[in-house]
Length: 405
Ligand code: HEM
Image (cartoon, rainbow, N blue to C red; front, side):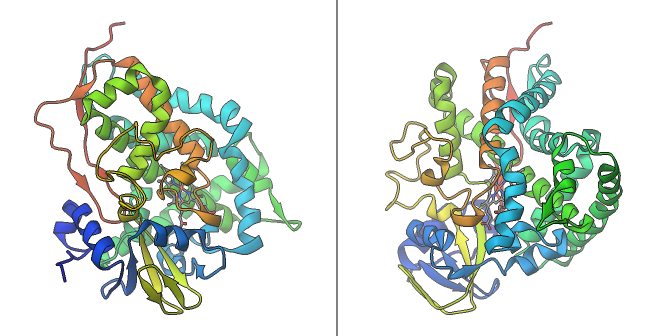
C-alpha cells in the first residue's frame, strides 16, 4: 500500500493534493482514527453523500461542530424545519433582491476598499481587500456597524477554526466558545432594538419573520446571524484571495480574463474547483451505506474531502491544471455552480449564499482589473496556502501603476 500522509500532518497542511490523489486511487474510503471518521475522496462518492436522495446522511455532526459556537442554525436542521428557516434568507441572496438591493451595496463596498489603495501602487490583496469585502457586505446586509469589522473578522475566524479543530487544540476550543459569548453580548441588544424599530435590512426581516405564527427567539436570530457571518465571511474571503492568486500565477489567463470579462464567471467556477475555500464537510450516516470506495456502517461520521473530489480525474480532464477555459465547466446558468464542482456542497444544504458569493467575487475581479490593469505579483512572492479545513493564500502582495486623482 502507498503511504498516505495523515490529514493532520504538517506535510498535508503544506500541500494536500498529492495525498488526495493517493486517497482517491488506493484508499477511497479510509477510517481515520484521530477524527473518528471515514475519509471520502472520490467525486462520485462525495456527490452521493451531499445529494443524499434517500436520507441516509444527517448533519447531526454539527451538534458538536457548530452548536457550541453558534447555537442552533439551519445546518443542524432537516426537513420542513430546515426548509422554512432557509426560505427566510434565501430570497435576499438571489434574483431581484440580489440584483437591485445588494449588488449596489457590494459595488459600493468594493469601491471603498479599492479607493483606499489605488493611489499607492502596491497592496496586499488578502489583508486590504479579501478579508474585508465579505464581512463589510454581510454587515451592511444585516444593518450592522461596519466599523466593527475587525471584531467580526476575529469572530468568524475563531468560529471557523473551532469547526476545523480536528486535533482538538484546547485554545482553539476556548476561543470559539468565547466568541459565542461575545457575539451574543454584541447582537442581543441590537436584536431588541431592531424589534422595536425595524429597518430595511436582513436582520429586521429575521425579527419580523413568523414560523407557524410564532416569531423566532432572540437566541435563534443571533445564531442565524452568527452562521451568516461565518459561512459568508471566511469562505468568500478565501474565494476572492484564491481567484486573484490563481490568475496572478497564470498571467496568460489573467490577460484573457482582462480582455474578455465574460470569462470572470468561468474563473470563479474554476477557482472553486481547483482551490475550494472549504476542504472538508462532515456528515453522519443514518443507515449502512455502500459507496464506490466501500461500506460505511450506520451511525458513523464521514468526512467529505471536497478538495480531493474536485480534482478527481474521473470527473475532470487534467484535474491538476488551473484552466478558465476548461470544457467541463458550465458557468452559464445562475446555479450552474452545482454542476461544476462540490465547493458549495449539494442537496438541501447547498450553499444558500452561492450567488451572493459569486456576485462579490465577480465584482471584485472586475473592479480590481479596471482600477489596476497592470496588476502583478510583487517580486519574491511565495504563494503560501494554509489550512486543512479551509485553505487560502495568507497574503497576496501586488504592484501596479498608481491611479492619479
Ligand atoms: C452552506 C460553502 C459563501 C451562507 C454552505 C456549504 C458549503 C458552503 C460547502 C454546505 C455546508 C454543508 O452542507 O454542511 C461556501 C463557499 C462560499 C460560501 C465556498 C464562498 C465562495 C456563502 C455566503 C453566505 C453563505 C456569501 C451568506 C452570507 C451559507 C449558509 C449555509 C451555507 C447560510 C447553510 C445552508 C443550509 O443549511 O441550508 N456554504 N459558502 N455562504 N452557506 Fe455558504
